[in-house]
Image (cartoon, rainbow, N blue to C red; front, side, top):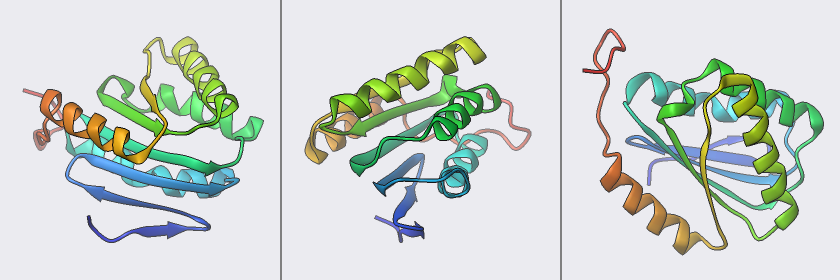
Length: 145
């Protein structure tokens, strides 16, 4: 796995079209925007982007963070984004699903998020998703061919 980049108490790394992030405690808007920047860069480079979010140690997102995530769904191409979230928290899972619904209302595109309880299940999801959505670079003009 490539080198991790830290943003406050959180961290992320990129490998091909896979974006991995770990959330530890609460996250503010500035931290979240910085943490998600590599994912947005991947969306510019690849036809599909996989995201593994380890949220086992995450706090509940603030209303501002939830609003940011919902509005971000309008700005980025969520049709090419596939995510898995590791969490044992039913409350956090429900919050993510509420953000997904808000993003659907704002962007008209559903988010594709799976939930798992452990890291091993998340990596199984990544392996299966890589077979369905292998790393494929976008053309230089950003148009898929």
